[in-house]
Image (cartoon, rainbow, N blue to C red; front, side, top):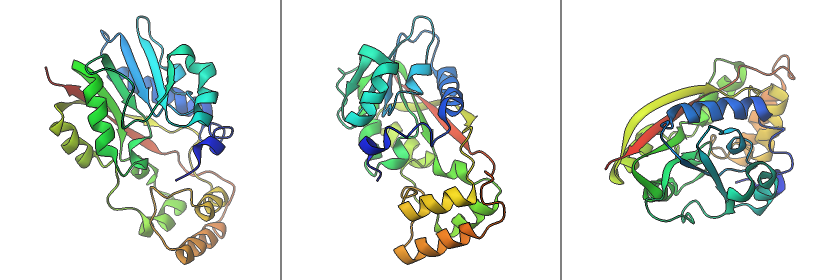
Length: 243
């Protein structure tokens, strides 16, 4: 797991910046009912996506466990930003109309606890919107993806089937889905090699230290090492809390 306090200063620049965030925010809002007056963005990070979830009549909150991320997010989210653990959200039962979790569950072995918390704070009829199969979104047709394929994690924490099963235990039922492009996230071989060497893909790839070194070297030898391959396409599920 990355140290997100240290990553905060460079996080947005290395992950597609505003175009990627705007794409995510639009897709999330398309799944949030028009009548919703409150939305909590769980694991909001630097607040780049959170700050773009704007709509008349919708009050948006953000929560993140990293003080470093929260410091960056403060200027985007403002007084509705709180520091808190996604497994113990600082909100009352049935107090929110919508909850979102973008690029979060794939990082968490205890994702079921987070899903349970999101269900707890939702009012009946409220909607939980979350990315699923996040790392699979990078399985585009490219030479980079082909080299990574043998090391792909087979049981992702945010696998759609797992999320739906846990959600059902907490009264959440599938209500819709959407897909959006991760602009600026297409991997160039040289960048991918550096990230593999740094252990960046811990949620997506499983390998020994020796295998990591081999993969990094293979990526470095690909043609056009500085040319990004196709952008990933991410998937969102909307889950409605039963009355």
